[in-house]
Image (cartoon, rainbow, N blue to C red):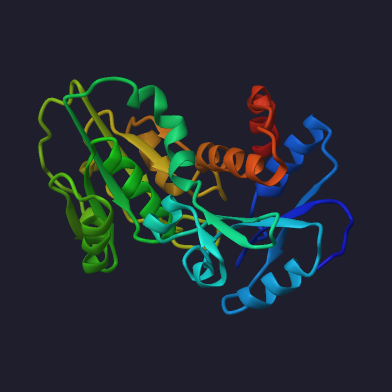
Length: 288
């Protein structure tokens, strides 16, 4: 780990080479002329304690963002948890406090919802989301959508795990857990009138990420007008989103969530809100 006198933060994970977080935070730091650094640091499974010990030994280290596979395993290494992170059982932001303790936060839920806010501000007769995945990010998404009145169908390789997540995080409403293969084969189901309804199809898994197989979802399972939302950021145009476009669905890529959750973390790290008026320029930078 490089030593520096400037305040610095990391994004940690394995793999981490694909992370766009340093570009986002670096862009905001430059715009605000803040003298600080943000970089990526590979941390293998089982090496969290070693990383945190090394980081805390440097007074300039202010915290880290956390990605796969550490969002749940890092909890045992922290001193305190924000109430939302405790509820979700997953952490994506660690902040070093003035008393040298480490607090874990989860900004995934708020970041995920940010691009959906224009739709969520509307009134709907019915809201339904099909969520693919049962990992740390899926936990935040399940909780966030349940709070906004969605009926949820969660699909995973282990339906019992999907059911347990719903029982823990989505207490109100009639929700369903299915095997991931449920959506793989075409269906001839005829959907009813969706006027006044809001439907989401969310890939909350790493499937489709560069080096990983694509998520196997047949778009005959999506009601007309469903919004396709993929949290994967590398590549931005995943096979999941490509197929959604071809089927005529509006899409949201992973950058929207990434920037939204990064904005919350940035303020926690550096004590000021990022300059969101430059989001257009930031998007250009991230998509080059």
